Length: 375
Image (tube, rainbow, N blue to C red; front, side, top):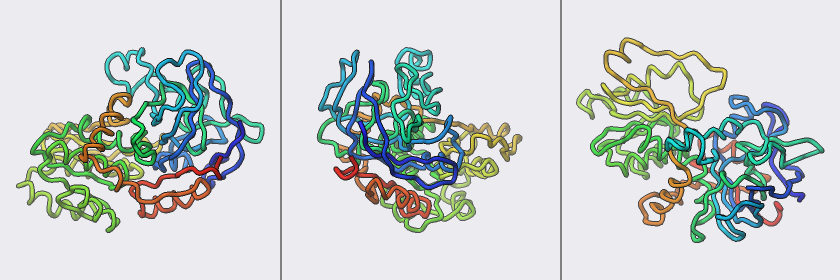
């Protein structure tokens, strides 16, 4: 079928909305009519080259939700008419990581940037006669997608699509960074560095886990105001301001857990994040750096002598098939505020405006809401 999609054709170029062609679902696949797509910072990493796909052109988008309109052979647990959220990492359920309960590290994730489908290694999207590489094998910056069953999660039909799409990456990643990777416990003092979509989800996770103090650090005044709304107890514009007060608030102990959710990770800042971390505390690095970045500034003596933990995480160390419905249940119960995380809505042809707003600090999360004009 012919439709539209937001593509990039080279590094440091704007997204271009143009005609694409999407194939029919093959064995193990479903076709979804997309209703909403989140504008996550990771797709901007495609533009800068920090996350390199196998080739161009790239169809962006890895957060999304919609309605199944066609199923391929072998799909017996998803039906036409089902509402689904996509999962940016597929989960096969059979590889060693999946069997060990670490479905966020499923072996299928090795092919996320290669563009070829899980089912048979072919391509589902073309543009200008060329094969298109969809982000995370999804490509939600288009009003339709064909994707393997392992990349979709069935959701209740009363969940708004613009809310459900946030669970495809940002909310699940941030919430899990606090509750799974950092393992925030009642009474912990938690610092969240970077208050975007992932940071706000981490902040809410820390609050729900029973944190005593939640320190939110972000240079944008509006984001600090939002952090207080979502449950932060203290806000600071930068690390220097945090270092001036956190020792007093914590009686010198510093933050038991530090969660780093900045837009782009810089290895030179690791030592500062660990300095904010208490003895035997954990610093979780959720933020992405460039794939070629290898230099880190770190006081190795303090790492050893203070028994600190430096922890990486992807997708919040969670299980998307279980965690997405669980988090939506918290939303329905009024315990997780997802509505307020959607700060602006865009048409597909406004995708560049959405990323400009993100980079300039005007969004917690922007969302593309598809209309008939996009199809």
